[in-house]
Length: 138
Image (cartoon, rainbow, N blue to C red; front, side, top):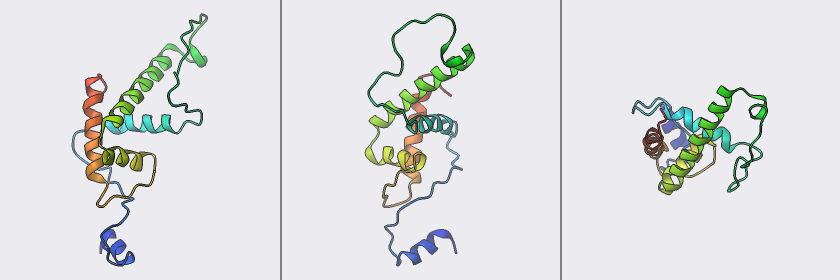
């Protein structure tokens, strides 16, 4: 007996179950997007997240690079910040069910879905991948 039938029996046979499952083994050519969605997730979990405020001050500094990092680490941080902006813009443009699926899977936010969360998550991941690829991420 598979897990879905067990959950159906526990729920009294109802089909309106909260889908808490996500199957990461989806072979749709967009597996590489998971890395950027994980970067977005890490950024969203920052305790000092201030939505709507700029991330950096428009001040020039001399004497090295920021936060005791080298040039390569600064470039990587800048690229990740750009990817987070692309993912945020994509999520704003998605239908509500698809953006909720991303929040559900990546941030463990609880949303109720009538069916499995995989189809809307796949669609959202594909659309994020298309936009990331257009912005030269891969």
